[in-house]
Length: 179
Image 1 (cartoon, rainbow, N blue to C red):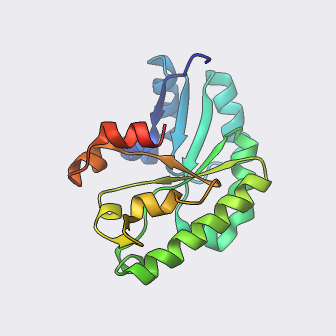
Image 2 (spheres, rainbow, N blue to C red; image 1 turned 120 degrees about the vertical axis):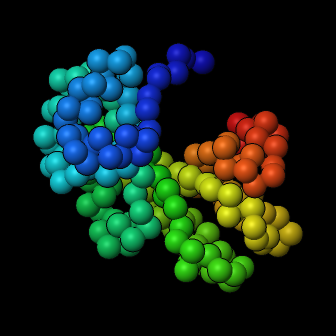
């Protein structure tokens, strides 16, 4: 197995990114990070961002993309990711109004599956980033978290182990299960 690069999820620096995206990326590179996962582009055109990343020696691993952005303009989101050289299109969150019952979860899982298949056709991977609420409901006797990946090769996991732990589950068991 090759060496894993060290990256940072820019959601952590969202306030700094909103104030000064270029300066924040320069600081991230100066600190020695090799790559970044975006959580917004702050109106920077993809080609300009790609140039800045190249200048700084940073790799774009992927980006958190809201379901609404996927729904409104899927192709533009995929094209942006391709332009900046990213691999992962990540669904970071599901609003409370869309996850109130099992029927809604079944619909969301089907929607994510369709998005993942289309993303894969375009040479990228679709990931789902969990919180604790995926452990509040069960679909066919398994947590929504597990149902998201059951019988499904297209959706990949971006596991947030803090939320797994917060939900009262064993993060080490989940890491082993989805390794």
